[in-house]
Image 1 (cartoon, rainbow, N blue to C red):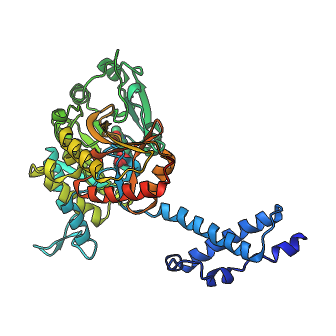
Image 2 (cartoon, helix red, strand yellow):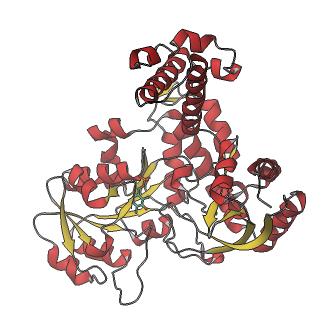
Image 3 (cartoon, rainbow, N blue to C red):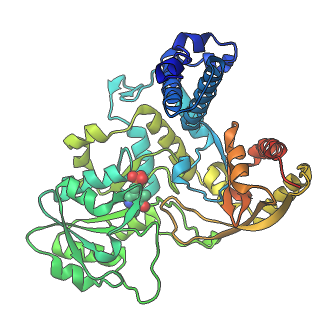
Length: 464
Ligand SMILES: *Cc1c(COP(=O)(O)O)cnc(C)c1O
């Protein structure tokens, strides 16, 4: 058969669309999307035919429909949706970092229609955007003032641009971090128009290194929290209070890029992390942190500090480009209220999960274990798991807890099955076993987890 004859067996887009083999769910997708998938599938089928494959017109139609379904599944995987995080990583950047508190979620919903974002309802006059959220954040940090931008990277850029554009920023060589997703501090410095003035060595930087670097050109000193790695051994760096003392003496502003946004002492969980109030109290002129890490709120970059440095940021032309929307402001205010009223451990999902005792998680793991019917050939065990904070916070943290380990299955296939129905369950694969760490699974997600795990096991076709 010639190529031209073979290609006659290719279906047309309309023919595929009329095929009774297409599911209703598929046909409910937006039309341009359907047509695109079908066209791609036909093009692929054409390629196969030209490569020598022989397909009758029925076979070609079936090929195109299958290929169309594959594309739809690929696209479904991209649809943003709720997932169950059984990775044991509390702040997982790929999974949207901190889960938000119920009150933050309802305030976001309330604010998504018309809302008085820039109006004081008592006076009926125009007010500053997000005044309430900023006041709460300022109180929480114990600072004179606060402003909010899109994320901590934006906060760094705005602050450096405002304080040190065209001048030098002094930073320790031990703090030139890459956070992840290609976010490299030196590049943000460059984007702000400030020049990097590196001091010290990778492992040791002394106060005198900063002191010797101060000149006419100096715009600021910045301390960057090593939020996603740690150094041990022969290591020294001045703490923020020493940098503040030097800054005051030489009249150089001191910026503290904390990133992680820890509000309270975490030592009760065996974790060491500098806090935002600690940085403010030590006297940093500006302290920067993310809204969606340990603060436990929405994505945002929060800047707190002295009025002298914070107030001008509101009028900075960059501010307009970096400001957040009303929904974020609502969630930030609700989250700040939780911290301020001392209810963080009870109401912030992140802290609830972090503070849950290993015994409680063990009980949950045994309960789940008892409910699952494991097919022959596979084994499900309750195992100890070590969770971590992750997401650019508390580097090297390890929080002991429990989870379930599934052996005797094709772990890649199981992981895929667990991801493939809603809500997707995301675990870890280790030594060809699937591990579901239960520290990061909320109590109300457990029944769903059981259903999803059972369904995945039932359809895995475990070899006996
Ligand atoms: C996480 C982090 C950032 C980036 O924060 P985003 O909110 O993701 O932009 C910046 N600096 C430090 C020290 C961080 O830990």
